Image (cartoon, rainbow, N blue to C red; front, side):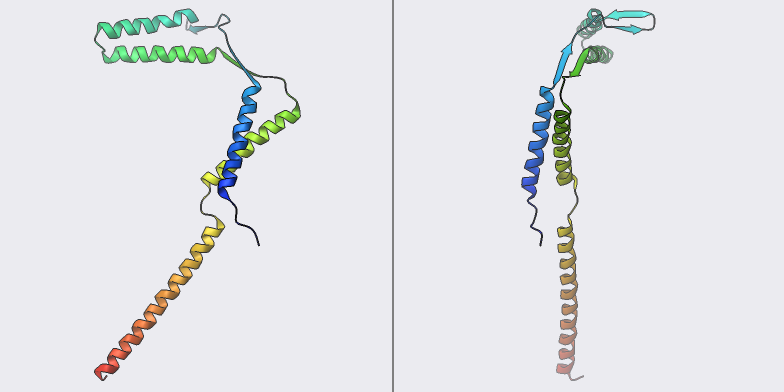
Length: 164
């Protein structure tokens, strides 16, 4: 006979695996940012990273000059988005040197923990729940049948009392 699974314990174990795997991964990654002469080339126009602030300045001035008109807000939001994209594009992410054992351990912790969490959080009713539901349905059918039989007996007794 199988023991009932403790889902809370499985959830905590999966969460611990995922968090520890992501922590080890964060220790093995180096993030750096540098402009390295990066710029934007749009058609024949080249804009260096320093010039990427100019549209934001124009948008802010435009917003204050026109008391916050819709086109000025759109232009300012687009220039902020352009700055964020430039920052992301100049970010370098590299993995540090690690052994195959460390790499496999890292993958097992991250994806094993994520798999355990996904199984518990995304799974439908288990086999035990289905078996219980089938048993409840069977008992419910039997109870309805007994009620029907009892009603038939009561009807028969009523007919006898009336003399039919």
